[in-house]
Image (cartoon, rainbow, N blue to C red; front, side, top):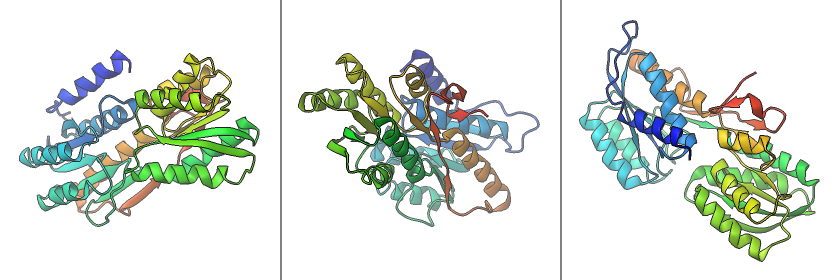
Length: 314
């Protein structure tokens, strides 16, 4: 993680009471933003985009991180309630474990707008806005098939097994990859979305499968960890595909250390969540269904230079 990213995240986290623009409509009311981590550029962008849009609309913000810990998240919801927030933007800490926390916010009169990850219950959050993970995974898998020439030995590195997104992405991958009999999966391991864990898992996998030809990972941080382990082992001809669309993955694609990633338009999603919260607070409705999917985009060397901070320019 670059120090500039961490410094920016720390600045956001401390910005609990920003100056409200004179032209804005939010009246200085507080919107709470809870993201999964401020040590991962994807989740930093959730906070950054939501924070900026809320301030633009005249709200003050409280930005927190649950660190993917449901118990910590529960404590933060108590804090949000005590601070009398008018809305909650939440990248939650587990599809089942977070239901009670969202219910608690609702009971306290705080409408929740979920981004990036769903919970396994409807009618509790006002909105659940997520990337079309299945569609994005099929895009990545199709490119993986292409770069491998429809054959080869590969491994899959998956995210947290308790995370709905991990399962959806894996299914999207396999609905494509399993159609090719000459593509052989030789190992499948979870690295819990973590780069360092993916690095160590990749080191172990290489010992068992030195003739590996491809790695497909459930997110960019794991893909980058796997790529670093491959580079360290001199395995520069192993093809790697990830999913998220981070700047670090973009740079790895441009450098030939990854073959592709898939952009989750998380900046757009976070902005949508704040806009819908504002609409709900002003009118009592968003005008949208609770569950909303936003399509992903394939990133290869052909268009990677147009990607920055999870936004693909035209």
